[in-house]
Image (cartoon, rainbow, N blue to C red; front, side):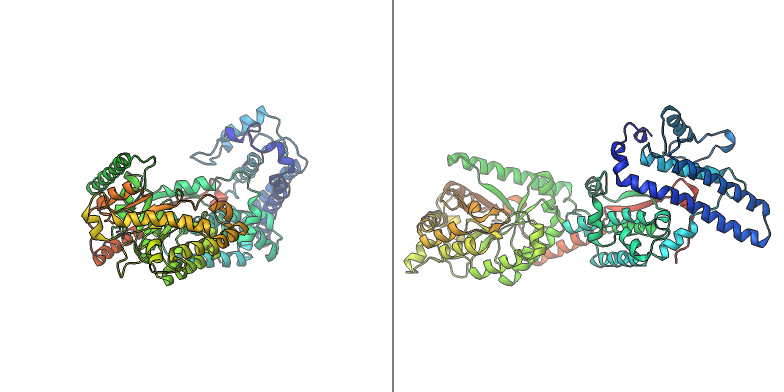
Amino acid sequence: MSQYTPEVNRYSASVKNSFAYDTAVHRWPAILTQVIDGLFRQSHELSSTGLASHKVAEARKIIEQVSRLKYELTHDLPLAPLDVTPSNATHFGTRCAPTTEAYDDILRSHQLTWFHSDWLFTECYLYRRLRLLFEKSNEWKDFDPFAISKDDAFRASGQGVYHSAMRLSEIVKIGAHQTSSPATYKTFQDMVYSSLWGNASDLSLLINADDAVLQKVQATTENERTAKIEHVVVNDIDKMWCAVHRMHNGRIDFVLDNAGFELMADMLLADFLLTLRGPVLCANEERSNEIASRIERVRMRIAEATKTASRQTQPHLLVVSKLHPPSDLMAAYVRSKQRHFGENYVQELVEKASVLPRDIHWHFIGGLQSNKAKHLAAVPNLYAVESVDSEKLAASLEKALAKPENERERAYSLLVYVQVNTSGEEGKSGVPSMMSAWESGTPKPPLMALAEDIILTCPHMRFKGLMTIGALANSRSSEHENPDFEALVTSRKYLADALAKDSEFQVKLKNASWWTPSGPVKQVYDDALSESKLALSMGMSADMRAAIEKGSTTVRIGSDCFGTRSTNSEASQVRAVEMDAWSKIPLVKEIVFHTKNMPWFVSVRKWG
Ligand SMILES: *Cc1c(COP(=O)(O)O)cnc(C)c1O
């Protein structure tokens, strides 16, 4: 109750100029008029039958009292106490609603008038005053004076009903909703706002509204809603979302709206909430322990190797999760706070990203066909593609990233590594190293050409450095020496030199004026192309140590973090089972509807 007292009202100081005030001034007398009208119509029907004359007489008495209330209101007279005597003591609610005595205490200790008081306080007061008049009667206790106009308003809400129903049917088509997807958040906002604006179509205000006005008030289209958000005084929708997000088989309680369009908007929101799905579950205890201790050991080994090599900074750990089920990744996410994961197959990455938390940074490290680039680019938290090896692939990625729907979801440029085939093995992806390109007499090494192409023609990507896998034999032969890592380090040095000396490229970069998602292009590459700034992604479970000694900036570790991998077909079966289980665990399992405390607002109306 205290939050409704005049002193602590968050906006009463400016209430005279506010939307709430305007609404109140127009709304309250209209509400009273409507009550009079509803009562009059009903009693008129009765009197024409010649029956129940005492009931008609009582209606006249109530009409008189409502008119007096309207006079008090329009003349801004003091708010009279509700005045409870045992005979008219009424139950406005049994749960958290303030008692009538609590109202009267405030009214007796403050000089409140209709328009010099807290709007919400007075709105509730108005309904109590009204309700008491009916409560005290003998014949009209259960009469709902708003029923006719509620039904009329609902009938006139055709457009709003149509829009909302269409939206929900689209949502249902999509099926389960991943709460980590930004699109789901937008839909949530949408549903909450339309449930909120649903209120605006309620009775009184719109008694004479035509369809166009009603449609505008109900704000069922996105533009209409955006325009109205500025009228929201306190908006906690983000907190609501956070709370929903943390649920698991949870329960949400609704205080239902009265009837008609408002009630429908509440039902739609409830329906939508039931479709929400959270992130997948962690692996079981034993498996989670295993993963956590494996990752811990890998991190320790990285720290040791960094120290032995007398390096200042540790390389990043990219946990390679290919062919492991989402629950394994979730264990690494929860227990080891791991956020960077590497995947080799487009379909697998896309599936996992759809069920795992949104703050994961996904790295794609596998062979990528240009025609699959669009699926990757649509993953909003795809962080890096480490396996770019042709201009054609870069162009496809850029094209997909530039699509408005992808661009909107991504705050930063996609990091791109050029994959180098340092071992020169046939059938291995990657461009030749700088040295082998020169040896074969190529005028401009493909690595250099590709790096320049990415920098100058792919504004949604950011050339970050080089990646290599290396020959298996080379990682087996020695723990410290590895010719492939040497070749990547040397390629980086020659690339940085060559880029610095390529005057045509430097002029183009200097004159580059476009913006990238990470800022102006010149700023992005300012000091980013020197040898010391270009990243080196090299080192896997078998050859991590040698890679760190050679200066790797990212090591990609799979088996040491998760153990041995199953085959492709086994892995996809396990994944399918988990995805299926996930789609069946709702965030919200139960919605409990509560009716409002006022008997009128509970009356069940037939729709249609
Ligand atoms: C699988 C894979 C890794 C991880 O290999 P492990 O030997 O399991 O550590 C690293 N990089 C790439 C490109 C991979 O495909």
